Image (cartoon, rainbow, N blue to C red):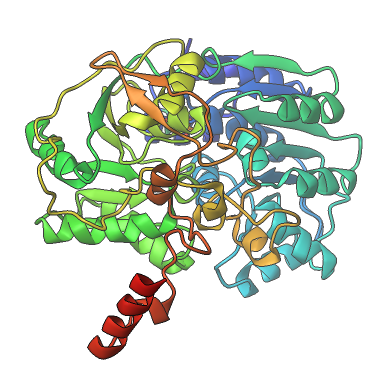
Length: 490
Ligand code: AMP
């Protein structure tokens, strides 16, 4: 099929042509006509399938006729993260460049003055993260009564980040006579419930079977020995000729540590995670996109929605604890017809996460041996991602997590908090034992012994890992001898 068969006006076709798109992707072929008719659409599509253009192009077509009113956007795109929102705004500008449409972007971390001015004048499309939009709504800066078209993008990520209540609230502020488009890479029950309550008689489209990894991505799994992870990573980079990659860590604090380790090892790297402000994140992203650095070390949330053309490789320095994240992570590569490679480093006791990934994707990850994971003393003590057992008490350190109970407001504004998911490992009993090459099996679910407890990062109060300070002070010899004598007498 050709774009010209899709009932899009000449100005849009010209912009699409200039973007270098030869023909619509499968999701675009299906979604564009459905959206143009004004009906609701449920799109099950992961990033990399062209799903953004699938809803932006017909939105532009529909918005090209009609006029905006002051403070009342005509359409609203809700994105889970700032990065995704920014990227969607860029697409909107690219595809709408030959039409006079106005757009405002409400995301955390950037100045609002310019956006308020635009909103005041009236915009055709508002792109926002849910928390920031509600803030501005509550301050009376934006009215949602004029929204006739609503897009909820990456609904499964909204769920992961704890944004569903905000999304539900926003939907109640919008007229029922709207068109609603909901896109999600996966369909967990909560997203299904959302779709059932917000969409009316939707056309359901599926870009590829849900939760599968792209066919063009060759993924590999390497089991590493404790304290050998960074060494193995270096060897992987060398032996597999990896000259450009996003490297994912599970925790924010590991991201910066790993970036520094890579730099010390002579590689150029930047990092991106939720503790950086927007301008730092943009700088990191631009440096990576422009090819100034070879590696971008990232957390899931920060990297969400990032679209980097020609990204040849993704490395999971940590195994994602939610199988869906594996699909999202490696979906950064192998886009738009390109070949991609993905490498995952796992400890022998992380088999249950690997099993969950295989179950979700329907195929085991092929093993790849990298020389160097031996038991010899490591040069990498105290390195990023090296703690083998991460108790759930560390939840606050994960980018995507929030403390139990209500989400912190600041995290919400930033598009960076995440509710603890029920898919999350419930406790620190993550012991899995390796069964040779083919992998891993769950160990018995017995209570952790003291030695296993020591491997965790949990401080143990009493006589566990926590040694009181007074016991660490040197004891004067005479007192020690006297004490020994006393013990002997007793
Ligand atoms: P998305 O799935 O929206 O994240 O898009 C993934 C990538 O595909 C982006 O780099 C788009 O620019 C690109 N893309 C979108 N539609 C097409 C198309 N029809 N042909 C080629 N590339 C496309």
